[in-house]
Length: 91
Image (cartoon, rainbow, N blue to C red; front, side, top):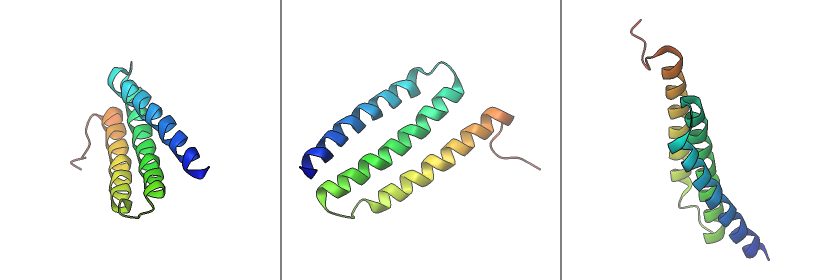
């Protein structure tokens, strides 16, 4: 029963990843694309977490950490770029 629920969750998360990717590509504005990219990273972290449960391993835990750090830094950098026009301040 638990394996069936995990399979259903993986299918739903795959659809969610696809929708987030489509919103990232054809988003009407840049902030919409940034939010979609951030939610894509969060969904990807959850997807990998569910895969770790299904496979009964912790082999992907480093991947989850790297993706979460990159998603956070990318969201902050893109938001700062939209707000000020530069990512790194020269001051």
